[in-house]
Image (cartoon, rainbow over all chains, first blue to last red; front, side):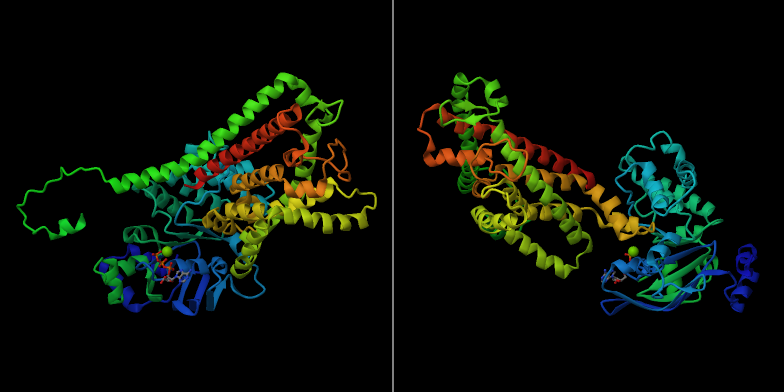
Amino acid sequence: MSAQLDEKLMIPGQREQAANNKPAFAEESILNLDQVNIYYSGKAAIKEVSFPIAKQKITSLIGPSGCGKSTLLRSLNRMNDFIPEVTMDGLFTYNGQNLNAPSVDPVEVRRHIGMVFQKPNPFPKTIYKNIAWGPNINGYQKSLDELVEHSLKQAALWDEVKDRLHESALSLSGGQQQRLCIARALAMEPDILLMDEPCSALDPISTAHIEDLLFELKTRYTIVIVTHNMQQAARISDYTAFLESGELIEFGVTEQLFTMPQKQRTEEYVTGRFG
Amino acid sequence: MYSTALNRPVLTDTFININKRTIRWGEFLIQSGLALCALISIITTAVIIIILCKEGFSFFQHIAPAEFFFGTRWVPLLEPSSFGVLPLVWGTLLVTFGAALIAIPIGLASAIYLSEYASHKVRSTVKPVLELLAGIPTVVYGYFALTFVTPLLKTIIPGIQVFNAFSGAIVVGIMVLPMIATLSDNALRAVPQTLRQGAYALGATSYETTTQVVLPAGLSGVMASFLLAISRAIGETMAVTLAAGATPNMSLTFLESIQTMTAYIVQISLGDAPAGGLAYQTLFVVAALLFIITLMLNVLSQWILNRYREAYD
Ligand SMILES: Nc1ncnc2c1ncn2[C@@H]1O[C@H](COP(=O)(O)OP(=O)(O)OP(=O)(O)O)[C@@H](O)[C@H]1O
Ligand SMILES: [Mg+2]
């Protein structure tokens, strides 16, 4: 474990000291953003953003509406390819490879970097097929039944749907649909899971379910989550990036960013005195 | 009304009288006028149905329904007459089937291309052209069949008759193709973008996304477009009369002249049969049969369309 995580265990005096030392990012990063700019029709929505994403940790992206969180998240698995007016520069390094190199197959990228969307978007197919479809088209060889069960269990949905696997996924509640979408993404055994406000359409109980789930998942997956909920970011994430009007204001260990932010804007935002 | 409200002095303690209900005559007149217009089409439909039933009923007093529905000879004007409607139904089926065989694959492929692959620029050029194609009078298609399609077919199949089902099927297919393409395109485009994104995020290619997510999701709308096109093909008259001729025929090939139900109706309507006679009444029974078939298809496609509307709301 890195020095930074241990900070959570430090007494306040020690913690301040550590902050003053400003230790370098000591995690193994799986994805690295370097001087990233993203433009919509030439207009910059993300400006000179650089930060690393730690392997098997949860990184949250926070910031006011319209600051570019979704835009940035979509750039991490080439989903911006579908928006014709988007152009990008800067370097995205995934496992030491340039994510946007011409030789990269975006389909292959998305097999390893999955995404869960803000609104649940199950396919109008059965619950079973929703999960099995991704692995199936990607040539999964082992037992799909087992994979479906395993994925649904990971997403804490198995008990609720095990008797109705062959019913339409649209018959599930919104919270269940979102967990199904998470299960669907997990069935691909992604390297990184990107989540854009996955709880924004959910009630507190479903949200709590999903937060518990993320906690468990991070032992196996790297997660990047966009959230508007400060408490959620503080509770679940290890690292936090705070963006404002397309610029990265502050990036750091979550604990530190919320309790001892380096920038005044960050402090105003996380304490709700923003504007 | 508003002016009085605005001119009223603003006094907080004024009594506000809301008991002012009167009949608004202008509104009443407009409402009745609109209702009357709507009524006209309902009355027309009702009158048509009544006439079809009445004439059909007296027809069946002379000819057994079994002879009409299952007879295989349609000779209404010459002695010995015979009133088996199957050759006409067969002619219609032959043309419709051939047209569907041409229009469904091409129409669906165009719809998929337009909704999933075409750039905005291509789509905004192709769509108006398709609509233009749909607006060409059908007699022009018939003329096109006779003067262009049939001669072309003759160079490939020398034995083909001047009037033939093949040519009719081709032009009717071309005629209903824009309908399938535009309606299916609408159905596919109604599939939420979020579903496509969900598929792509699982590492699907655009082909896999289109065929396995978008198409199944929009299938009911696509099916409805097929049914509407088929019902249009069944009801098509001028083009098939010109292209396929007027010979009731249960031929299995597309190469001979046939007669469809609609073409028969044209023939009789043009005065081939004396009014009031049995041959004249066949006009109404054939029309009634046609009406029932297309009505069923339209109801079926409406039902399918409604089901698909519910899917995303
Ligand atoms: N397709 C697009 N075309 C042009 N501009 C866009 C497009 N999508 C987003 N933008 C702009 O880019 C900026 C960032 O948008 P983005 O959706 O990334 O914000 P966000 O931080 O996710 O906001 P929210 O919290 O409301 O979801 C906004 O100013 C937005 O107007
Ligand atoms: Mg967003």
